[in-house]
Image 1: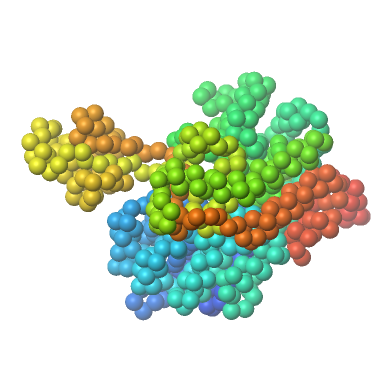
Image 2: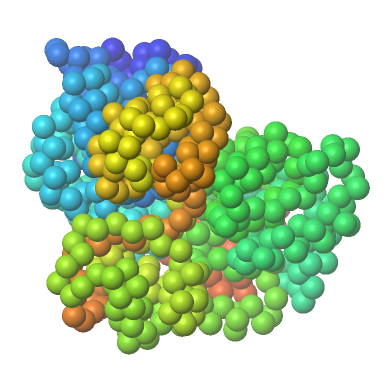
Length: 584
Ligand code: ADP
Ligand code: MG
């Protein structure tokens, strides 16, 4: 089977997008490969297609691709998408029970699984690595590969473990990212131990996108003005969650009456603090065109592929130019003209300086958060290794009299330093513990349905009498031949009768301890001072871009984009002159 055939057979597409074929050929030739494609450029297919080809051409029909990716939500999406195409795929991430993980491994070992998605923290577990080497892995795909570089904006220390896997699995690696700064590009290849440098990229400059900076004292007024002038779907990025709601409500008052569809305001808001169901409803309404403008934090947009976004407006300065272009690049995927507007007020450059101390609190403060966190979770000195906890960060801050912003930043830094592994707000599965003993169970006078539910719980989840176990509602519903809703109601009923303790699904943050509690915290320059410098430098570059955008081909941007073309604003003197001379 060829790559072209696999594209057609398994994915139903006719042609490769720019660079996909070249990247796939390189992988199939067994070369370590770094693929730099913009968001939405189609990076996933670059490892999915060759895996299908390799498995198809394998004498035993074996072939598994290990995909390392930090985004649990996207992981689940991708698994679901592959399954829709009848391709077996599974995921292992923090928060799953040992039993659930074992089932996934067995499937990969004995079933015709093609993709195993894992979150990077899993790579730190010895058990995981021991099991991994038994699997028929043919390719390692490292998605969001900039996470391996301390120069990237999202460095994850557990990504460095991928190098260890390379020592035990002798297969090629494909690294994928949308970040293309020269430092990150070099770092990824070095950290992953590329046999030789091998980079593929498409131009990041997209002719149809117009980048504009609007200098104004009245951002709100400008925002309204632009939304009234440029028709079509829009995204407005704001940094503050509360502000997304306020702005959306204000805009709705001004332009909302243009909407003909009730229940779907023409302007809506979105941030990571909303319940999952609400978020997906809002996202869907926007995707379907029922909502025109979404006012959101940067939690919106990852993995969203809407081709006809005409406008991306940034109300606040992002932290870096890369982040800016990543978000702005969600405009105009269909190749039609689209606008990326950055609103900039004179005082912005001063305000953003505050972010440096918010993101990098003093080392003593970070140490204090660590020790208080261990106390809070009752982890004694020298213990705690491999323990996982659900943490309500706000509650923790209230109870321990800590500031939310600093604590949040400290948890991130402690993660970078390897003391903990903190995963922000993810969907935790519901948990159940049976409160009565087996003897008492026989004397219960329950409905047949509840009896069957109880025995299904006992059968599926060993240890359910001693500890609350994560349960899987769809699976239980399947066991009982009923619906998730019925199982849920029944669990609630049983818990009211104090037969079980039921903790419904919730959104929580998770803290995992890769090492025992330490007496003190050492912050290496690699995780603190150097990163702080990078953060400052990125922020400064972003500020300069906002202040001097009329030099859109400035050294600054060329520095960021390497030998690539810097994006054109289409508005500045230089651009207009170029246009004139082209026209001649
Ligand atoms: P990235 O990871 O680069 O942001 P994805 O891999 O998520 O992008 O792909 C974005 C979308 O493009 C997906 O919906 C995917 O199915 C689609 N896509 C990718 N390659 C092709 C192709 N060759 N033809 C048609 N659609 C494609
Ligand atoms: Mg992707």
